[in-house]
Structure formats: C-alpha cells, structure tokens
Length: 310
Length: 288
Image 1: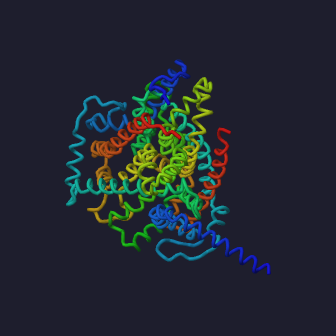
Image 2: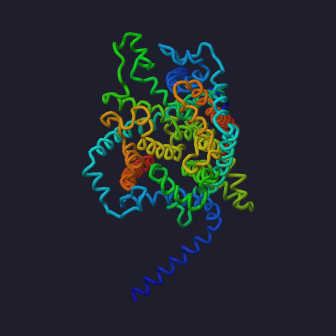
Image 3: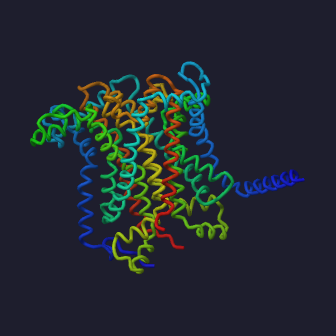
C-alpha cells in the first residue's frame, strides 16, 4: 500500500517535472548551443581528468586504476607538495582579498573622476593585464646583477651597497611573487566593476541625495555596494581562481623549479608532474585537491557576500 | 526625472576630490609602468636597450625595430606574415562574435527563468572556472581529435564560444540590471522571446557586452594556437612573433617591437569599448 502510494507520488512528481520542462522549451532552446559546447569542451575534460586522478597514467600507456594511491602519496609522502601548499595559501591569502578589494576601490575611485578622463584612467590601471606577457619586465627590474633597474637605482642612490639576488634568494622570492601577482590582480573583476558601476541607475543616487546621503562613503555603503552585489560575486570567483592558480609569475620570474622550492606553488607542482615527469594521474590528483579547496573557499565567500548591505 | 548633471555632484567635498586624484595618480604610475616601458622599448635603438644604468624613456626614437621585425617575419619561411595576421584576425573576430551571442542567450534564460536543471547548470559554469587548465589539455585534445577538428580554425573558435567566464559575467549583469517588469510588459505586448532578448535585454547590458568583448579579444588574439594546430600555415600571429623573440639577444629590438605590435589591436578595442561604456550609460536610464 505504502509502496503503491510512494510510486504514485513519484509518478505525479515526474509528471510535474515533465510539464515544467515542457513549459520552458524556449529556455532550453536558448541554452542549448552554449550547453552543448560547454559540456563537450569544459565539463567532459574536467570529468575525465578527475577520473585520471585514480589511475597511474604516463600518457604513453593507457591509464591503470590504482584507487586512492595518488591522493595518499600526495598527502602523506610528498614533502614538496606541502611546501607548495604553504606557499599557495600564503599567496592566495594575501593576493586574493587584497587584490579583490583593491580592484573594487580603484574601480570606484575611477568612477568618481570626470567622465572625459575615465576611459584613460581605466586603461592605466588595466595596463598590466592587457599587455599580456609584459609582466616579464619584472624579471629585468629585479634582475640580480646591477643591470636590474631596482638594483641599479638602489646602488646609485646609495641605499644598498651591493646588488641583491631578488629572484634567486629564497628570502625574497615570495615577496616578489606576491607583489607582481598583486600588480596583475586588476583583471576581469576590475573591468566588471567598472561596467557594473556604470549600470547603476542615476536616479538612485538622486533619490539618495534627496534622502540625505551626505558624503561619498554613505553613498558607497547604502547605494553603490548593494547594487553591485552580482558583480562582486563575479569578481570574487575570478579573484579566487586567479590567486590559487598562481604559477606563471613564479615560473617566469623565479625559475622552474625555484631555488629550494621557495616560490613553488600547487600549480607549478602540478606542471612539474604533468608536463615534466609525465605522471598525469598524480597531476590530476593535485588538480582535484586544489579544485576542492577553491570550491569550499568560493562557497564561503558567496555566503559572506549575500549579507552585504543588510 | 531629471538627471544628475555630469561633473560635480552635490554631496562631494572638494578635498575628497583632490584626494582621489592624488591616490589615483600615485598608483596609476605603478600600474601604467609596463605600458610605458613597452612603448619606449619598442622605439629604442639597440644601444639604448642595453645602456647602463638603464633608462626608462627613449632618447633617440627610431622605427628600426619594426623594420627589423617585418624583415625577419618575411624571411622566416614560405608562410607570409599576412597569413598569420589573417589567421589571428579571423579567429578573434568569429570567436568573439559567436561567444557574445551564445553566452548572452544562455545567460538570459539562466538569469531570468527558473527551470529544471538551470541552477545546477549555472553552478557547473562557475565551478568550471576554477579547474586548472593544465590537466584538462589531454582529454581536451582527445575530444578534438575524435571530432577531427585538429588543424582547423574550429578547434580555437568553437571552445571560445562557451568560455565560462563570459556566461558568468553576462548572467550577473542581466540579473541585476534588467527589471523583471520590463520583460513582463514586453510579453503582455505580445513580444516573442527572441525579440525581447534582442531588442530589450541586449541593449540594456551593453557595458557587459563591451567588457566581454575585451576579454574575448584578449584571450583569442594572444592564443598561439599551437595546442591543437601543428600545420604552420594555420598557426596564429603570437606563434610567428614568438619565433622572432626566440632568436636571442641580437633580436631584443625586434622582440620589443613585436610586443608592442601584439598590443595594438587589444589596446584599440579596449579604448573604444571603454569610452563607449561611459558614453552609453550617461544617456540611458532604466525606468520601472
């Protein structure tokens, strides 16, 4: 009896679901082109690499299932991975939040400028991102010999006696990576904030002015921030994925591998295994762990942003 | 309703405005540095590129680096420079146009309707942004090979259509800047979904479209295309310029010209898009 009831209930549910789907045919039609391409080129590769993480896969031979061995080795037997995790957390903990807040503050301050010079101001701040590989000039600036700009000026002004090996001395490497990463952090999030600030209807500010908002700080808190919620969520996801995925800066400035692994990150570790040692299974396990951490971090931040302006 | 006039707003202090300008100028110098450096380096004669102590600004500007660059590019082999240029321009244009259309269509229904699977799908998109690209290359390649798309423009264009960042950006904007009542009203007036999308939704998210355009152009224009393409005549411009830079110290001048050359298109589009974003919003206002 109860089983029959349950079955009938299920059937009714299925019927409602089907009706719901049929009512939204147009929606599926709009979504379809994106969904097909996205599933094929983004979801499928991710699922396959998660599957690889449970195998031994050296790219040349077919993958062989080995259960959780990769994960166990990664956490219990890989000392360098721990260094990488420590560095990545430090980089992410600093460049993530600081870069994110900086992106918003600069976007907001630029929005305060007269309209005529805004586009140029945006260009100036977005320059590190738009100029692609130009961050490599930091390797010239911090170059260890006296040809490095920083060393040259410091010695010329008598602040330092001898050039410092900024990019190969483990004491300074992390600082340099963090500075350059921060400098690169005005990217996608920043531009979306700029665009977002431009979509806030002017009459809201006007109403705010009538309601007695006296200065720009009150306006920021009561009008701007609540209106920017969805862009702030976008920016947060971009900041998380950028800061946790730090690798290029470390590899190109401090070398690969860096001295004593002092600037080694989770992603450089992954590249080391995936592209140098051809241990794709192990590299996939690293990627999966990193992904899980970023996912949790994202959940947490989205919750925090929900409360904004309340 | 009357609009706030461009320029000074009533609730701004003069001291604050000056403060803002000073803060922006100091940090601006720090952020603009690569651009200033790249522009100067491209016009430096060889002796200035290696001067000690190094100087940021060029003193005797010359276009030798550019003529060197084009000489080298044309000497490189059977494939001419214009071919690489065409490849990159074609992929960037088609990829960007398709991406904007396809991502916006999907973003519209995800932002404004709740239907079975919609939330799960959107969650998958945001999550896909976080998975590192290095390990997905092999399965990605296998899929391309299965489709027979290796060595075609399709291998670069089609995946670019569905870049997760674009859908995420558009969905966030559509959610926050398009009032539901507007869509309801259009429906009562008998407008079809396609009509609503094209003539109501898209114009209202113009700043987002322009921003997305910048992201897409940047990604495609800087793509060397060597992951799925190994026939030389189908490779992209960055590939050709990288081979110049790989020629060693003697090519430092040509390489710095190449860096600047690669930046011309994204920079131009960026400035056009940004001034447009500021302009459009000055004139439109959504009234409920």
